Image (tube, rainbow, N blue to C red; front, side):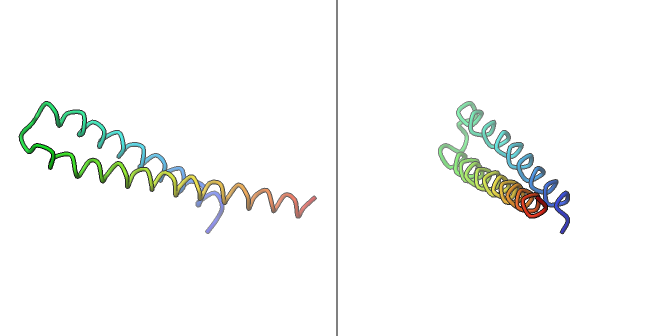
Length: 78
């Protein structure tokens, strides 16, 4: 895999995680107004937020790893 491809995928992972977190947060915020299903309506969005956090954290770790690899390549060339 090329470095630029991995970089793009990591950024896409962060973007998707943030968009999903925004959607889940909106569902949580609007759950109080609906009151149809009670607390059970919050379980899905809360679990989703946790998944979103993990996705963003994993994507950030990919970016950090790529940064380290690029730095090591430059150090080897110097």
